[in-house]
Length: 470
Ligand code: NAD
Ligand code: UDX
Image (tube, rainbow, N blue to C red):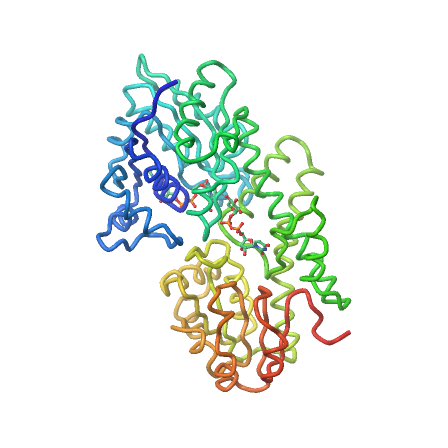
């Protein structure tokens, strides 16, 4: 097996950046160059004051230690490809917006362009690693492209090494992964390439946590893991609707079922709906794959996980309207949190976007506050959600606030959309004093002490609990 000394990572995003920065930190003998076509992103990774393009706890420390030592960020894609022994392809694979499979299939254009670039530029043999989440058998297409375009004497071995980090905990997930998964062809060359990558991870990951499997199993395992995780959330959210109607309490139910060691306690938090760039995209991708394989019942099964999630978001906004005496026209609603989960500035598919859009169509006024999301990003997302409404009109209805307290001022209702720790520690007495009465709180994340707030005077509505005592 080749001993890897130079790594190139194509794509300096949420996955490529943190993953390869950690590899550089843990493997001082390997030179890691992360490249991207987006100059602004690369400049941010290189910024002297570490104003990195993504917010992730612990990331700045990692970059501070490794950058300039054996970690480099660059837009010179060709040079990094040429010099590397091993290349991660960590580009975006969003859901296709048009053409065959629109709305379901993964858009593999970026993966293909990166692969073609490798084939054009490489003048020596490379191990090419799929880090992006891709449909099952993408490695085969990559191999065909590489082999059809390679220079004499160059061989390409393709591995699948999907990434399981979650945003907000990326650095701790990378430091101590549950497992690292490497898929390869079961030929001698494939196994050797697999061993080369395994030796990179073995610098800090215990060997019994590095799983080596066939290429197609590896690709499918990534989609399967995300589908199973999202399915748990849709299951608990479906149960939250039953709790609201019966008087059962979803936290108590989750606790009780989570005690069964076969079910386990994690990932059973009812919410206003899952968001993030992965769950919906990867399930839709699995739905598309199932349909292409003529498995309509399998496709329908997984599609329901996404439909349940859409239902949960709609159900929550309807509950807000119902509780506020069936109209929110002209009423001011504070939305606390815009990111899709706490400890990230990422807003992709965030439930908050859907909620605010619903409130806008009910003609409410919205104050939104998030500790990490920039005002610019909020406008971009709201504009994308309502492409036919001019931004000026959106800005007449929505205001971006500088603090939770400011957002709640003169509001009729507070809606908690993201589970930021600081929302647990709000001075609710001060919030109550500044709000119109009756003052309502809607907890979409099960983070507040409802009894305490009721004592202050709030009317509190919580996911997975009935509005009135049944
Ligand atoms: P991202 O959009 O943050 O980053 C992708 C980067 O690739 C962008 O900066 C883009 O400019 C760059 N890029 C695209 N084409 C390029 C090319 N030809 N050459 C150079 N750079 C190019 O995406 P992400 O969130 O990092 O996700 C990347 C992949 O990892 C996706 O397939 C995603 O499904 C998967 N994934 C994401 C997560 C997550 O939590 N975000 C977790 C696991 C897996
Ligand atoms: C997910 C997977 O967890 C990760 O393994 C994969 O690599 C990428 O996709 P991510 O989307 O970053 O990670 O965050 P995750 O913690 O999984 O949360 C996804 C969404 O589900 C968030 O909106 C979160 O708030 C929500 N969620 C999570 C719940 O509503 N309830 C839960 O119990 C857990």
